[in-house]
Image (cartoon, rainbow, N blue to C red; front, side, top):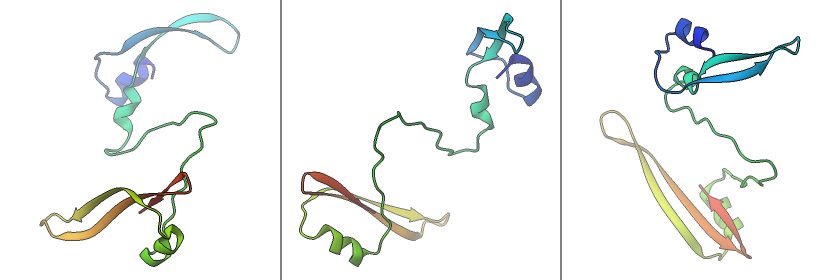
Length: 112
């Protein structure tokens, strides 16, 4: 984010101020002052900002019922399990999520 634009949006001057050399539309090179990471404050809280490398195969995520998942998994051994309870503001359990990972035929199968 450019320095002037950051000040207009309310981002305070802090760490991460850098000077970059840019080329404009006419091909002229000039230096521009920017604030690194200034746009991060504009994202909502809890926003998962991430990227992945080219050529990396993404894992397959399936949303199924427990019976359908057990039919797919069969007798594959359980390699990982984690249970998370979702609670409301008064502390009551609203939902339970059980993450499981099985190994079947040399590859891992994720179950949620």
